[in-house]
Image 1 (cartoon, rainbow, N blue to C red):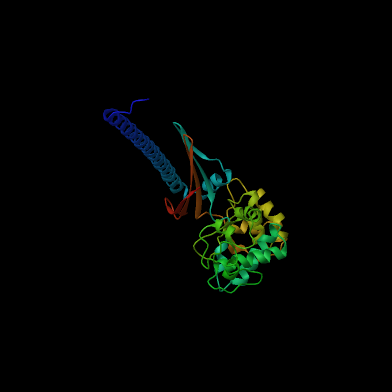
Image 2 (cartoon, rainbow, N blue to C red):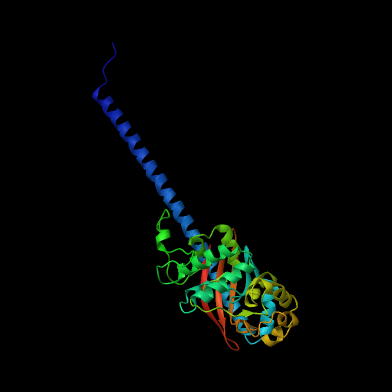
Amino acid sequence: MRNRPTDNENERGAVLLTTLLLMTIMAAITVSIVDNIRFSIRRTANLQMQAQLDWYARGGEAFSQNLLKTYSGQQSKLAQMIVAQVPVEFPFEDGGIRILIHDANNCFNLNTLADEKNAQQNRKNFERLLGVLDFDASDATKLSSSIQDWVDTDNIPGPAGAESLEYSNISPPYKAANRLMIDVSELRAIAGISEVIYQRLAPFVCSYDNTDLPRLNLNTLKPEQAPLLANVLGGAEGLVAAKEVIAGRPLAGYGSVDQVWNMQSIQDLELKGSGKGQVTVTSDMVRLDIIVQYQDQVRKQVSTFEIGGVNDARLVSRRRVY
């Protein structure tokens, strides 16, 4: 027969179990503390990285502002920089900054559709642009009406348009903005605009905090932006003339709008001065794409500057692009 354990043996067993339990708890606490420290270190490193990227982007913006001030009184050189699309690059250890300059007015401001006094006229103008971009007439009507309903202030749907009632039936439901569009990306929330349609529209449209239609700069339009000028020249029938204007542009640019309107291809369109007020030969608004690459991180910032007189370039907006 086995001997029963003594009290001392029972106490030693209890102490051993208690010790093992305490060691297990301490080990678990230690692992948790180490994980928290590791996470804190990684988070701090990420915050420092993001701050560094921000400072690099701001540095690129500050340089660009000084550059724009230098060329603000030299429209010909500024136009050549925009047309060339050669990035300004600043390499540094483990990365670099790349800056591209665009004319911010070479686009159709979607917020013009919110102008109640000229609602119908502006919608027809946009539909004409859609026609130049090879959209079907019925699709153009639906798109222009839906966008107009998105940016106007009422809840009454236009012809083939969409207001809050239609969006309320979507899962999850939402309402029409009924205010000026803040960013072109809002198009993806509008009825009838798929990703494919959005990609077709995005290069030709913009959204400013007003209902004005920007004047196209004849000296900075790119060949792929010919549809914008064709729209000013009356629509699809003006596309050939628009391409000729851009392709035949002198290196120093056109000296005046009259120089372009006197071209034979423009005269043949018999515009009788129509559209002349929608174009210019100077830039008063530019957009900068500032791309920062540092180690394995990339940051893109879009900054818009208003150009006034000589040595005048004022920051209008900046936003980070994800």
